[in-house]
Length: 348
Image 1 (cartoon, rainbow, N blue to C red):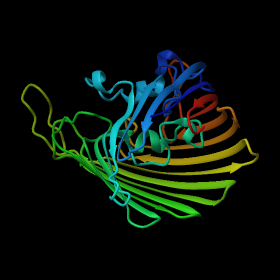
Image 2 (image 1 turned 90 degrees about the vertical axis):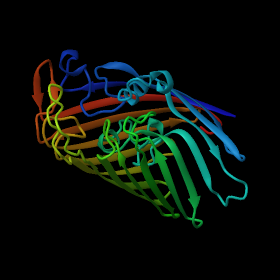
Image 3 (image 1 turned 180 degrees about the vertical axis):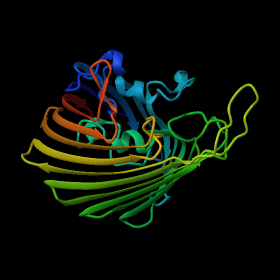
Image 4 (image 1 turned 90 degrees about the horizontal axis):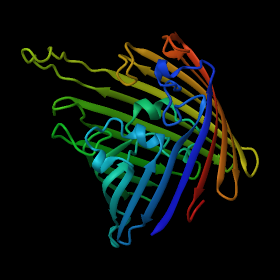
């Protein structure tokens, strides 16, 4: 059983100086490193892993702001879900030709960025990670190599970001990964009922990423997401609720990021994202909204297992969506963040 983990802390400054009264003193449209003008613990994680031979197990125990935000939308599940990022068993039959099956709670296959900051190129998580895709699922997933470079998979899960289903239906996921020496192309599709107490209202997500790796010192990716959440019309319950109208809000976005290794221990990353939310559904805004962000990151990695990232990020919207001070709202924000990540394990 391999033991690994990390501790991730940061300090962030926001030029809008949003107050606790305004929005809880946070960087608007950030995930995990959202607390501003203060030191904060983004995450502390402990991992236990045993590769399948033919049976394996994986457990990620998570603390800090990351855990709080991951499980914000899973009320009533704190007894079984809180502090757990992943918990699944794996089976890999000796004669299965690479086939693997996992059962339990696992992170989504969608998106280029992942929960763990040190595994991404930028310190802050982007708009697509925060609003376009789920974070985790509970259920079954499989993967099977078709050729030496192409792997496909299927998933049957309870929905988005929950352990227990509240609608009696399942979400189906289809995955594809083509890995070549100079590029990797990943595509994911999720479809299924993801609204409360109904199996008729489906949520769809198409996610694709092209990662270019021309040489060891330069990498670049483009990630596109399109999502839609259909809500069927429902009759009003007299004296209880108004009529729910049929609706199909959708969102889409594109992210592009390039990373260059400037020395053996230092790297520079630039990231740009565009995100369109046609009714404000994905971003919980009052109307449709277009968001953009640019991030520049400097990274320095010490051999002993310590990683430092210094980052400047500029976000802007076509609406006044960013708090300034106690009550003012503006169309943009600028932030500077310094993060330190200490990690340990068999491979660091």
